[in-house]
Amino acid sequence: MNALPPGTILQLMYVAERLDRLKPGCFIEIGAGNGEITHLLLSRGWSGMIYEFDVQTAERLEQRFSNEIAAGRLALFNADYINSEIKDVDLVISSMVMEHLSDEDEALYMLKSLANLKKRDGTLIGIVPAGPHYWGIEDDIAGHFRRYTPERIDTITRLHGWSLQHVQGLTFPVSNLLLPFSNYLVSTQEGAKVKLSKLEQTKESGRRKVKFKTTFPSFFSLILNRRTMYPLHVLQKTLGPRNRSLVLYFEAKPGVRACGLR
Image 1: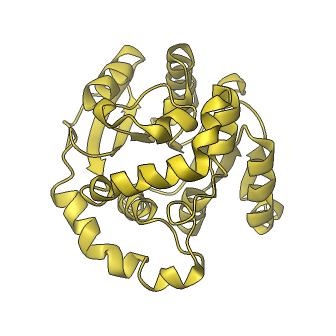
Image 2: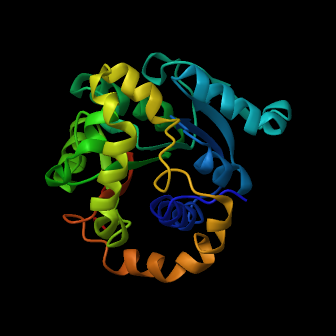
């Protein structure tokens, strides 16, 4: 079993709990990366489609989910989500995608997602890097335009016809404590990527291989797993300060009254 990074495990644990609140239906995932969220959705009875911009990442996802694609539970499009056709779905979800969009494309992303969900009164879920004051080498090499604040999420949802339902800080304090070590690993192993264009940086962001940050020896799964990380999951839910966390999770719905930022 492959070992996942601690921050990824904590994010997946939180997403799993939030998905349990929703009735399984049809989803769109944008920028699926290594497919961990896709696997989570499929394991909970969802079916849907992936939009993946990078060819190599799309090929890897096609191999991983070949059985689900053959069974008709999953469709994979190597295409730009913003320019795709409108689909009527129950969920649009992305993780570490919106920060790669220019301000104009971010607005188009929100409008496209609204159109895809409006008929079914569906849910938009986003996971984004947080805290502009945490900007560092990883943002420089990964093609980021911004790190998010709760205020920006509130603004972009309201401006584009959404009602923000829920915002939560994730991976606190684990990612905060590991940030200096993380920056060192990225600087030494990926520092040359600062010379790439934002487009190339974005393409490569879904297939990064940074030893002891994005990839770990398999035996690390003995200590990096959902069971051992559960106390830290409880901690991120209990603390999870939106202004100090390195990751923000949010949910929004098309044009309904807000339930408050719980």
